[in-house]
Image (tube, rainbow, N blue to C red; front, side):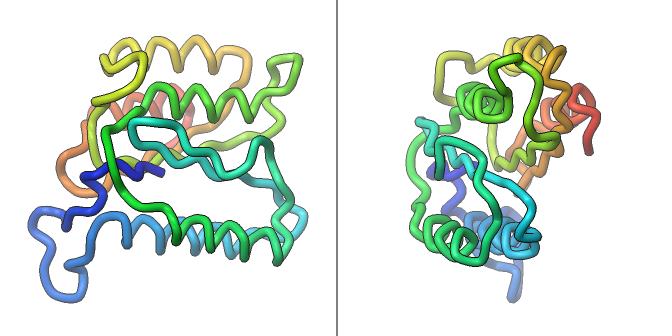
Length: 166
């Protein structure tokens, strides 16, 4: 989940009760997903701004106490800084992959409102090339979620296509 400074803004064209900062909308959606996990499911959360901000160093079981801790952590994260898409995706792959390089999970959800502005790689075409390479062995499904109108729609669609997601 993107927690860059722009996530604190209200999406262009938002009106009425939906006139909330993008981070509030994203937190609500993320927590709905986390709280719906079964106790036998495993998950982790990686937030990113100009840095990568992982919740845990590995996948964890979705017990009720773990989900409560995750909820508090999600609520405590504040938007600030740039958008480091490349390093956040790489970190997700590093958590996902075992020593053999095969994934020990099958799906990543990637949510952002922007374009890459921070990190080692900021060119969308290079990020996509890296993702293709990483996913040759891992075979992770990636679903992309764009918030607001400022994100790179074509980049997000291609990332999902490469990851056989939506």
